[in-house]
Image: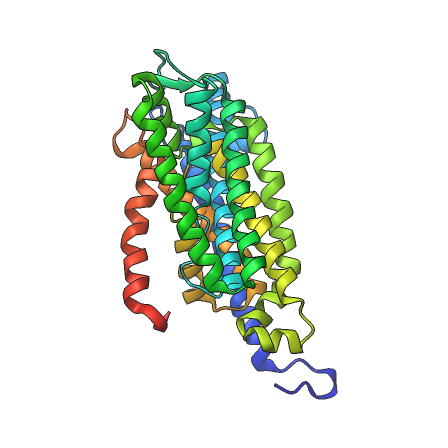
Amino acid sequence: MHFHDGHIPEEYRRYVGRKVAFLIVLTIMLAAALVVAVSLGAANVPIPAVVKSLVGMETTRQTEVIVWNIRLPQALASMVAGAGLAVAGAAMQSILRNPLGSPFTLGISHAAAFGAALSVMVLGGGIMTSTAVGAVRITNPWLTTSSAFVFSIAAAAAIVGVARLRGTTPEVMVLTGVALGAFFTAGTMFLQFFADDVQLAAMVFWTFGDAARASWRELGYMAAATLAVALFFFTNSWNYNAIDAGDETARGLGVRVEWVRTSGMMLASVLTAIIISFLGIIGFVGLVVPHMVRRLIGADHRFLLPASCLGGALLLLVADTAARLLLAPHVLPVSILTAFMGAPVFLWLIVRGGRT
């Protein structure tokens, strides 16, 4: 494409315009979904009352409590988690040049589950209580969260370490991730075998990814991490585009391929570890969303990464709202719904193979 006399060709302007329009439509849909999600539930709050409350206008005390204390933290947590997992998945797929790359398929989620199980079993983090939420809760969430975080970071470090030894090829990273996933799953099963009823229930409870666990404080940590890592990915979008063209081409364009791959993997893993350690395992979002978005907007990372953020936030928010309403008054953890949605899409991607 030739840029004569400094003019931007009409064709290119239209190309960018279409992508920007898509991002604007996604943003509007996300804002609308947020208002609807906050209004729906056991006690329905009319949409005008939700909007009034969100913009700080005067509403009833009951509306304020439902919106700000109960529903908004959960809705925002699912948005932030969805955005973070999707952008981490999009970056991993590019870095590994593998359509099946995601935090879930690379064993990082399984490592977090093992860390949580270890904390419940060895450090005494789970106890049986009778609460409205459920019969089991984690007594020391920070201990369990820290343990899950440490193990998921260890798994990511192992993937990067093996890749350093064997050369950072996509195949090495994916195979290492699969092996680690199997190893940590075996470790979790070993702990579960020796656990008593209370510990076993606490372990299983933790692995259900649930956005309702996040308070405003946890939401702040997740949002800060998601924003920082997403900005890093956006600033590297040109490098990812270059890597998509092949390692040799990228090197020829001056991209430090090994550094881009290692730093991207570590940051995607840290972000995933933070989200998973607060909310539990939410699978398939990081795998499915980048593929769906790529089909609609193309593989240019300048647009693919922000669109993955918005798409992930929208998907998880809708899934979380559906999970809350599906079996009301019982609340399904959102991870059950994402797994049901994700598995068919995953199989479809495998069947399509090289045509993705």
